[in-house]
Amino acid sequence: MFASLTVLSPLVSRVWIGHYEPVFVEFVALLALGWLVNVLGNPAYVIDLGTGALRWVSVGCVATAVLNAGIGFLAGLRLGGVAVVAVSALSLACGYILVIAAYHWENRVPVGALLPRDSAAVFATSLTGVALFIPLLHSLSAREVVPRSVTIGTVAALLAAIMVAMWVHPLRKRLVRWVFSGAAS
Image (cartoon, rainbow, N blue to C red; front, side, top):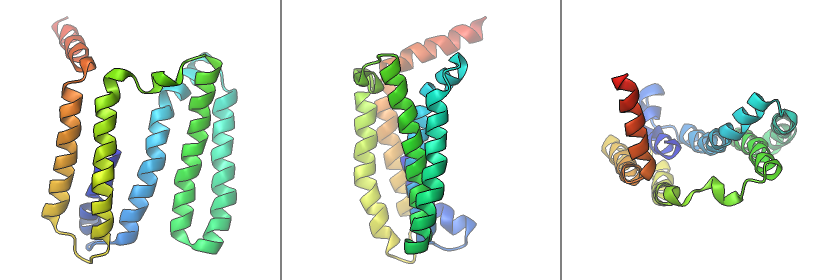
């Protein structure tokens, strides 16, 4: 979904800003990466909150704040606004990587559990989509006008590829069974 948001950002730029704005598209891509790591870290974060194991959650949040303020300020002075956004995304990712790593280390959860074998197709499809569509997005950012059809087609292709991988995922059957068993009660 974060890859789709990034690919869709040129169209959003035209709707919200009234024209294609390359800086907006760049900011969306950078922030999407940071928030992707944040979302992936949420299970460990929520489990730690629920069990009261707040040490690494606190360390991660402090690391995020310190990196954001310290490096963001310095990067902003030297390199401008894009660097501030990049540091913001990077600091968010670093803070949550700490939470994920600490959770796995403290609970002796193997690193392989981060990517179960059944999810490899979804992961590979998403990674391939990003590898194919981000360069396309970057090449489009050099132009002033990004055709809506290109943006919509790119997002549709990426979503279709990911949806096919999700459709064949074994968890889909369990989820459908769970939803319909709850609806019948």
